[in-house]
Image 1: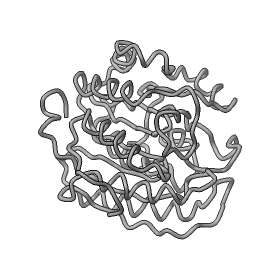
Image 2: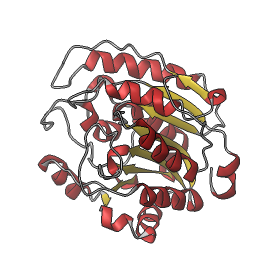
Image 3: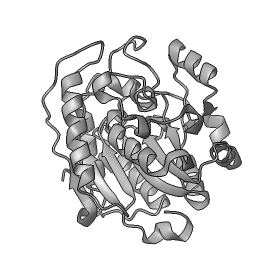
Length: 293
């Protein structure tokens, strides 16, 4: 969707309550967050993916790897049942829910697709470099084709580093910083995102006409949004994020979007207000009240 089309768009919403990719202190809150965020969207277009809530076994340096493999297959199955024409909105859950949606977008659009990764973290670790073993810190690297073998996309579904724009990243591990530098991955600071033309220019420089938007809510400053799993200070104000997302929808065709890492707190009313504002800003109508679906 782009420009005026976004106002009439009715995306297919997949709620994916996966928490096993998280290394946060209270990871199960992410499943609750997926349901709560999904409940803000119209039920007619919403499907809840049947994710096994049980923990899994750690393998090869990745926490809960077998559970994540099952979740990936469940998400792929749900995606196969969606229509080809609708724009996809994937709602998590931890960032690992993005594997199947992004892979599908890459397979469909090829080099005409860029991925804008709004996130406080780059998610570019491997099992060998990850300090925690949490898969949510390896997702983007896996989409490139370098990750735990059961989760790596097929060759035609893999994302080129030339088609990535990191947006709002401010908490990097040393190995991630080295990888960004060696690959020449485009990265915009929070300050740069406040200049709308910088984001649009970075995406345009990839040569893409279509954009998949990954939104980890920890790109927001925790002073303005409390429902975060891995908060990092110095993030965007919700109004700044809304402006950046709106600018993308006006310039590029949105091939899909994922919203992840919402960990609800007791301050749910304020969090819901912020989430509605962001969703409304990109042309997604919301319901009047949130709550578990």
